[in-house]
Picture: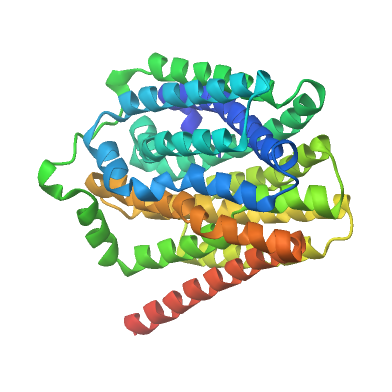
Length: 403
């Protein structure tokens, strides 16, 4: 158990983790409220509209890829995070005020989602690579996994609290509470002992920016395989706002409180998956193959569940497999990438993880609207199996090359 939480022994990581947990709870509260606002208040249960919001929120990671990784490698990541976290808090406050005033419209939610996506595109690679400055290389795998644990512990708390708040005081206040939660992470960044950060200096200007990162990945068959597996799962499988909201509303005719409970149920599995990864040694592609195959199986079983309760139970399995896959992917890529290239390679990874959503979310939403939410989960199941096949083919080629 002590080994699982070893990164918390360091002051800087401990302070960062505390602030991030509070902010992450607010983030998951807002995601839940935003999906509910679009699905039930601004549209007539349109999964396609939820998919469009997801596309606008995650699409900028792909559009801004030439800049985001370069910024993470060239500039002080702590200062970048101070700027992005402040901007994200102001956007949450703006959307909350519009909703509280009763003037929020669908196009405004689209606009705020896009602006949040633009800021997040710069925030995510800086935040992910900042972990290596907090703990150093020897604890990086553990720290990455604990970050995911914190994110998904918040995922257990946030949606359930949001569901209760939506039912009692409305969606607008949820956005405002999320805006206030950013004070915690901004405070933690201000409290860090800057002299104790493991800063490795800026990447040289001659490194070539994004093109250098793409060339680096292209010449690494292992990284190409891992990122392609992530593309398949991220595009068609990690569309949980669509899966859970449409199953809650259309399949089980549940309200906001039940929707929050379902989101929290999957988060229970996500926390378990993150803690499992934190307790293990350096991950490898075999773990990615196993977890993506388990994800496919979990989605298929979830699609067949006859009741709200059994569907929630299957979401725990889906959460375990999805989090084990994404956390292990993050660790594999960071640990196998040179420090000077890490920001750009992580930007590519995050662009795939979040930028693939604009490609898949509207399509998955259309499947849910046209054929039903159970068929949309079937698309997710197929993505997990396809990802596992890609990993198995790579392992077969790697074994043959060693003979």
